[in-house]
Length: 127
Image 1 (cartoon, one colour):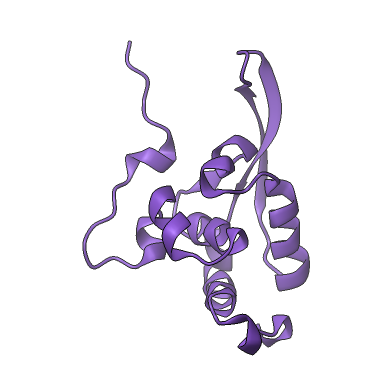
Image 2 (cartoon, helix red, strand yellow):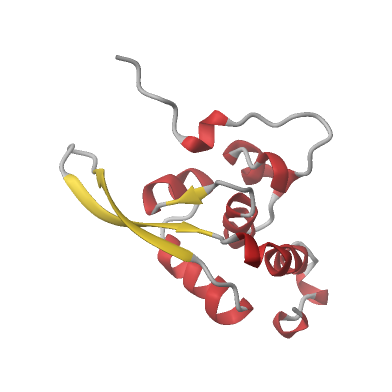
């Protein structure tokens, strides 16, 4: 029986779409300046969510800290869903799946625009 591809591999970018609309991990690694921007761009796509193991593909080794920073410093609210996934040895591991509710998209886009500005012109209080 063939397994379904992980969610991050199921969508392929189309021409003319913005980076947040395609959200391919390989594209985000190149186009987003920081890991916090890559994570935010990825979860801004409807139906996208991440757990700590999936975030590794985007260069984030501590997703819980990244989500905490987005929540505490930028005021974003995330949905958290506990789940069990197999670890490297196949044993079940407790993780949290993070997603961004649609009600947060407008604010998240503003935060992403702020994060993509050069560091000299960036102020966290501007959002």
